[in-house]
Amino acid sequence: MPHQIHGVHRVIVVAICLGVGGLHFVTGASYDGPFPVFVNGYLIDILLPFAMCLVLGIQEYTVFRGRILRLILVFGVGFVSETLQYFGVPLFGRTFDPLDYLMFAAGIGGAFVFEWLVLSRIATEPSR
Image (cartoon, rainbow, N blue to C red; front, side, top):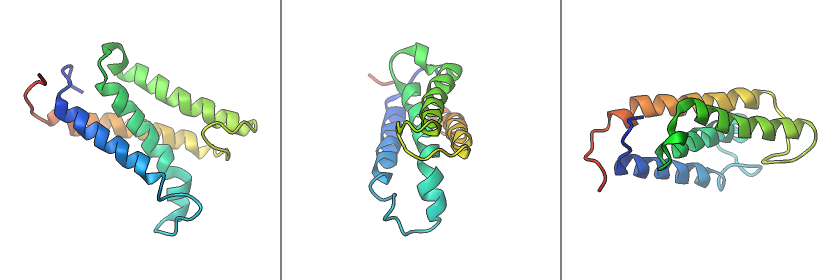
């Protein structure tokens, strides 16, 4: 992502985060749409780290904009949560699935690719 964060970047990221949050209302046990195993088992595990990385990349504190730190923070939260589930502690979920670690990594990687392919190429005037 460019060193200068523009207002349009924030709008895009907030819209993505609202969409990810909204998915929680349509997925779950009552979901009967296409690909229910993927949607209920892995989609949120990809999209939440995706959104978390993007949010950390647009905030004001430049220390959190670094990709390595964001990767460590976001993957760390998912890793701790999933590992606690393995030991029977239901933090952010109840069912341990080792593939979730891969989904977290996919979401983080997707966020970095999205920043590179989309956000970095949006030509805007600096926010005032």
